[in-house]
Length: 346
Ligand SMILES: Cc1cc2nc3c(=O)[nH]c(=O)nc-3n(C[C@H](O)[C@H](O)[C@H](O)COP(=O)(O)OP(=O)(O)OC[C@H]3O[C@@H](n4cnc5c(N)ncnc54)[C@H](O)[C@@H]3O)c2cc1C
Image (cartoon, rainbow, N blue to C red):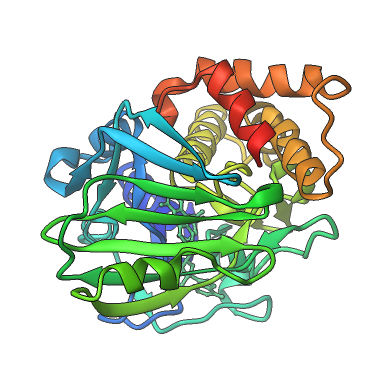
């Protein structure tokens, strides 16, 4: 098959590597210029999962790790502080990881694709890996995004571990994710665009330099609300179809899980000697990410100050049980007691 991948972020670069191993003819299109390409992200994720995806793609994940967390300090409204035990949460060199995945693959940098692009008719299958932009698929009326930006800072002293401040009403949070050698990402996603914590952090660390300011909104609407996943010969994978954990705006692992669903479907179609089964792919994605919709409902209820721990008990338990089952995938402890305390404090 002749397959085009639009967007060379985490999903696009991983898919390009894996699909080219399957022997398909592949082309990648990326809007950013080659040297300028910078993944807008805080580069945090679970080592347990990233090692698995790396192994599948033929990379050794340990070579990319910047910082391995032990404890996450979480500040909550009302001067409350919680500590979460970390079980594999790391920051890693996402830029290098993505560029290594693309080694040997033809990438057209500086090519912004849209619905008029000729490749749509020239290829058997076009994969929309444009993340937040969702450039090749119809917009969803149920889309929901949160504005975010971050600084890459260097020359930091006394930076210990992952540090987060949760905003009242679950309207966003501040993060400080350490990299290595005195570098960190310091940023925030905030529905109200106040970004509390960033300037306070910089004031506390006059020694640090800002090397980069980067940002874009993060999609919180889960797959169920980001349909359709396909349109003619275009199919979405990753954040373009809502594969982001709504409570955290964490999209690396969900996008990669979505890639594996796509790859499984592609193999299945090849084995059957048929074209790509868009319907089967869509139902597999919806099934895998079903509980993300419950998490999203909890967040939206909290944002609207309408979450009631008694009325919404089943919803909360469902979120907890699913997260607990996937503890390894998050890279931090999932505790019912702490979760209740966070939700109540926010
Ligand atoms: C500030 C910030 C911090 C974040 N921190 C984390 C984190 O620490 N951990 C985590 O798990 N998630 C984090 N996320 C979310 C995570 O980065 C995304 O969910 C994830 O990268 C989505 O992967 P993707 O491949 O679907 O899209 P992306 O990684 O966004 O890749 C999309 C690519 O498509 C390209 N593109 C867009 N439009 C076009 C077009 N028309 N033509 C060609 N190319 C195009 C873009 O340039 C980009 O390279 C963060 C997001 C933001 C904004």
